[in-house]
Amino acid sequence: MSDVKQCWIDVRGAGEVAPALCQEAVHVGLDAIVADDPAVLAGLPPTVTRVLVVADAHDDPGEADLVLVTKGDPAEYADRHPGLRVGAYVDVTDPETLQAACDSVRRDPVTVLAFRDPTNIPLEIVLAAAADAHGLIVTAVPRADEASVYLSILEHGPDGLLLAPRAPGEAIRLKEAVERRSPDLELTELTVTGIRHAGTGERACVDTCTYLRQDEGILVGSRSKGMVLCVSETHPLPYMPTRPFRVNAGAIMSYTLADHEHTRYLSELTAGATVLAVGADGRTRPVTVGRIKIETRPLLSVDAVAPSGERVNVIVQDDWHVRILGPGAKVLNSTELKPGDTILGYLPQRERHVGYPIDELCYEQ
Image (cartoon, rainbow, N blue to C red; front, side, top):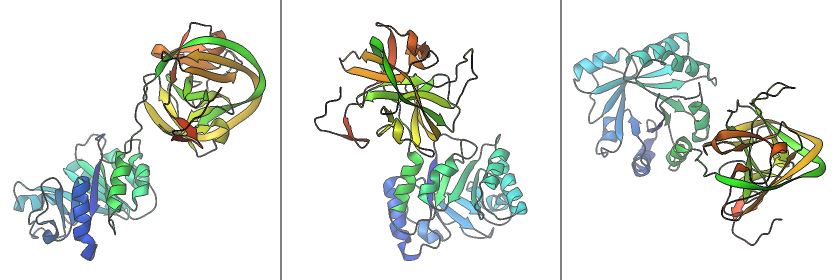
């Protein structure tokens, strides 16, 4: 499976709006346009793959770059048209068509799949069948906003998605959904300047629906322009089992990143929300929150400073098993930090209002 996912549109049945949909697809750089009439594909530029769906081996391919056969063996059509790329279009509606889909992904250079029922199990089966195959697999999706679901099936999803838009604008939304990535962050080495007991208060553990890696955590800070990388509970402790889904994050008023731009207070996170998991090398991925555990605990205040002079503070639970990441993914027990130690952090450049970056005067102390 490719990491670069393709975006296709299907203009069959689009009627008089088909030319506008094709123009939009070419303009935004979609990978392929699917039609069942060679005339619709005629004249399209070479920047887009022209895909013709046929039901009969005798159908004329016209100017198509790729032909998808809905009935019979694609090899028969390929024999009649040497040099033409030929694949299969399979509507999966029952066990027999599911088997046909599995056969196609192992045999044909291109397979386009459409699933009748609202379950991901058939797609999982087809993707598993294609594990050692090299053909291109494209799956039809009902709406652009469901792209992320299909792309996460068996973690990697198909090689591309096919949408049948009914109005201009939908192709753009599909492309945006497919190309959405969580960018890396530029982490900063912070120097610890002070550590002190901070009384008692409520702290939040962020329990995610994901196995976090040993060099991953979430960014937490008392101020929106400076955060510290608090590590996941993936490292063994002598008195309790690991919690590989958890970050003992900090005091409830602390900021964290919900995505690479927007902040949330820890107290605002709820089941089903997202939070940004961050690795020691700056890589990021959004993860789903399964639960927030807020409990009263002793607190510890850690002050640090960035090379730029930006002051950073984080308030965490005052306990040895709460940990912060240092350079090289070094795991540091928060209660053992001392002035001069180096920890990893992130310095957002803008102030925040209800989580959104803004430009205005704002002092946080």
